[in-house]
Image (cartoon, rainbow, N blue to C red; front, side, top):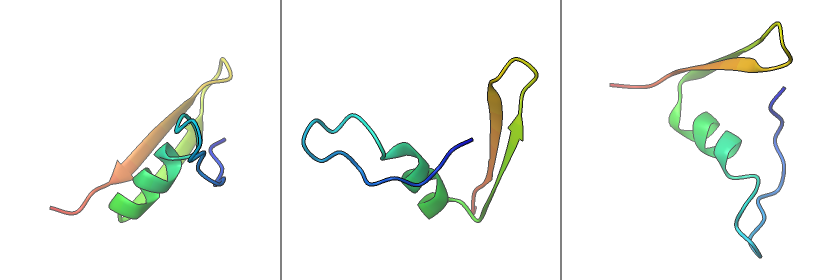
Length: 46
């Protein structure tokens, strides 16, 4: 499952995506998939 973590400002390769999704969306829903993956749905403002 996604989790908040501190962004990596040195390499810039980790920790930015989930912050961005949560900052831009009104709501998020994460559904675990059968094979270990996940589906992320985000409600975005118009």
